[in-house]
Image (cartoon, rainbow, N blue to C red; front, side):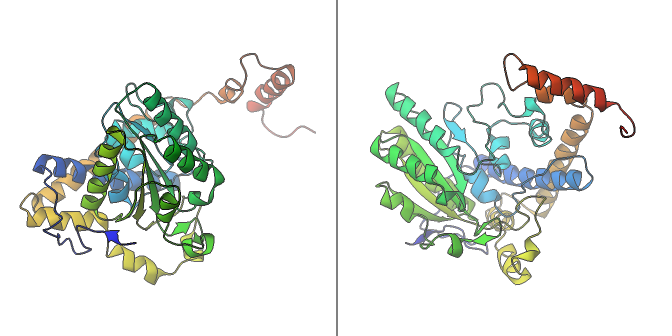
Length: 352
């Protein structure tokens, strides 16, 4: 199966495929990609300082993640995986809100008001079936909206994902499936977790239009998802998009990728950086220059720092809250545990 590519790794455009997006739209998307990387780097620093929980960076996947939501409206739904914060920011999540989420505050998980996003699930692939359910509900209510759900190559091996593809195809649910194939399911390469490395065939096997896209090509991602959302809104059912990309950084901050992959492989993909590729294209079109690029990067870094400072200024969590959101009425045994916890919370030393 061929791979859709409009911008090659040098930022050169295929003039026969070049879309007619406005300069304003292209700049908005570029800024979202730069902002995602600025947020990424700030979160990595905070985690290494012990001021943030485990975090899943998206360095190298900005085009794939941001590009997929560029055709969604506020009435559409988005069911993200845990590496989707670039898309979430574009959908209306503030960076401070996302910091609260990754730091484990319960108020960080619900989406902002009037943003039709589901909170991500750490259980791999578990968020895909609910997305199809939302799509089936749209059909039932005769709405001309759509749902976009993304997941990684590792999640493609989950049984629930196959069930979701089947239900969506059978009931012509308006769902766009984005399989972000970054080559690694933590430390397992795609060739070891799937006999067929062309994951777009999963969509074909379930009877839906399917396409492979260069996931580091922002224009290809925007065009593929635009066509898929148009199909969904016109009642033509689901679309499967395999976005071929690469995780240039860690799986999470608890990971050391040097244990399972070599530096040469990473260097090859660093030369295909989606942001640099898009910068070259925008510069050639006269939309960007060296000065405007520098100002954009500085502005995004400053915004990430401001979000960090606002996050630090918020009060710490109440440690007793861990008991408060499990049951409507706390059971007797859990109440005893809470009392024991409170007793020991401020205790110094060890009981003899």
